[in-house]
Length: 114
Length: 116
Image (cartoon, rainbow over all chains, first blue to last red; front, side):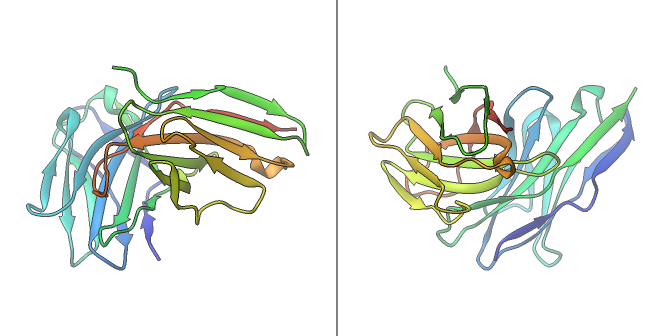
């Protein structure tokens, strides 16, 4: 069965510092991995995805994520955090071997302090 | 262009009543998903449509929940005999994926359902 774990309920970081939001996954086939962000009073927005190829993927708003197959992880990163990055971040996985169901993690709230 | 829209934005009903939640996907998107998001949780998959047919309804919690997409565009999620535990935000998402399952999903703003 597919599953996603986001071990941190909240991540606090100072503006200008690098940030990491952690995600580990479990899937029987090849994973398709996604990060979405949810701002207050707005719908979920796609940030980036890993399908195949380069383990480091770049996405919107300067975010990137690194796929690590041996650790079954897909951590979200940004070199320099902005106050406007404060939001709720969700990691999601889909079984790349024909599965349609997307499983989301419980979310990590990122708080960037000025 | 227009994104995914959902109506109503809020729905308050009494226990035991029937409700319908509507989703208008992005034009041309063949894939449509319904999710349920409870407070403090991530979206929970309910059902996936490819065109008019439900390709995967394994996430529907019980037979009180049903969804349709008769013309391959607008979808309606129907909940019979609502229970207080059904209270949540119901999210709809669409994707242009066809048979490709790696496309990202575009989410609507959700319908907040409250069952009193």
